[in-house]
Length: 269
Image 1 (tube, one colour):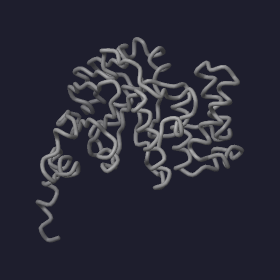
Image 2 (cartoon, rainbow, N blue to C red; image 1 turned 30 degrees about the horizontal axis):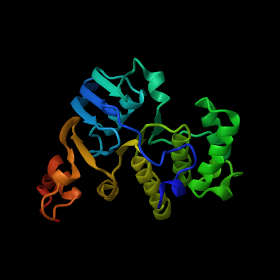
Image 3 (cartoon, rainbow, N blue to C red; image 1 turned 90 degrees about the vertical axis):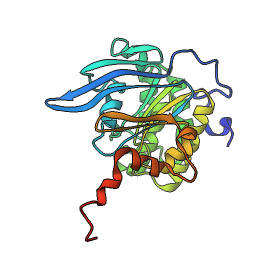
């Protein structure tokens, strides 16, 4: 699909602008401690602008804690975060004007329609009323929800809520997207649509930071991958460099987090 067919007017450009020298995401010696539990342990990595970045790890590895710190929803115990060259949380407001967020919990306004919610989000980002309305209609069409414009969000399926959440993240033309499990609960057709949209956004110069348990999605979409385990970074490289022979991303992931140990005490199986 071509960019102009997928992305509504004003959301992405046909050709990416020149990329500034600073990374889209820069994390240095990041720690997060909850009581006596270390959730994130001395995390350091960077994401180039215009990159589709997959951030992976087993359950409890620290993925969601990390992305919450990037989103400004949790404070770091120590270390530094820069998004688009600006420090978080010191420049949180300026950063949030330039990023699109799709959190794991799609916190939408259940008693609005999808169209009303998108228009509301556009107005929150200071879009003029007419522009917000036009973009909301275009995004509902883009996400194939034209027939749901008058349906209240509380009646939506989980997959439909994910589509609206992603549409809301697009409406102000952000430069960076932070997405925590955006495909969870989305059917095959919806997931394919969302993947195509994300690929076109990256072609248009956006940067996407994605967490997901669906490794097939990462293999298909991402340029670069980081894997964390028990709060520590264990892999940070391009997919091209990580692959050896017929090895899959699943093989790489299991090896990195020590998954081969899982069968040691279950020989009776």
